Length: 244
Image 1: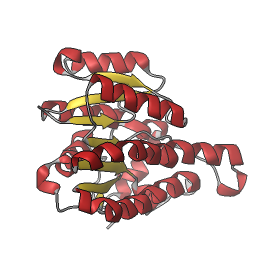
Image 2: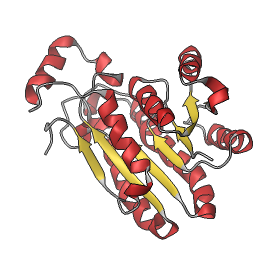
Image 3: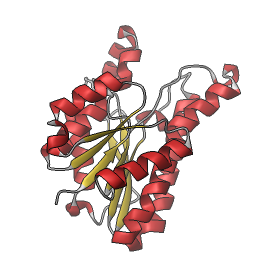
Image 4: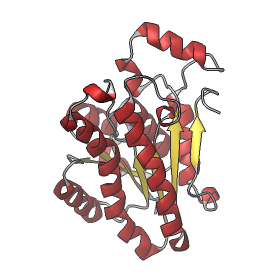
């Protein structure tokens, strides 16, 4: 039986690329979405639908009751989650001293707390079977921030600390925890960046281009594999040399 993988934020540019790569590799996918129901249905159809054992699950990841309900539904309809890819996230632009408490908390609720809650409710299943893969998606911004990205950078930095701590906690259960810190890719949040700034980003990147979503997906697929069983607590940078 193929392994079950839960991808949060599966309807985004990077999330859908991850889904395509993992479906092709034989994973049975639990595809999480929140508001973009039509995009979720289109992705499920593209991947072969329920006939190929890919199912959709709606949840507001800011609410623990939604997370618990979704995990119970996945368990009833598919089985135990063996791979968790914490991909859901939101951007924010604004100078730190001008940001409201509400917007600061919202960034952390989606980017950090939601990811922690998903892992919290996946880990007991993984511990029972003594196997599992947890992958967080951070950002190069956590290491090389731009002005106006304080909330986003801080929320992604927190994920990296969580990665290291959970790796220590879970290694003896044969559960690995790793984090990918992408640079700037040609999918997802880059579309909220205006063209002149995109050109500046490309010129600042030694590879002189944006990354391709498939390149990020390939690295994720490796971390999910049995071959990565001795790789844990790591922050994997994929950024074309922007941060070294």
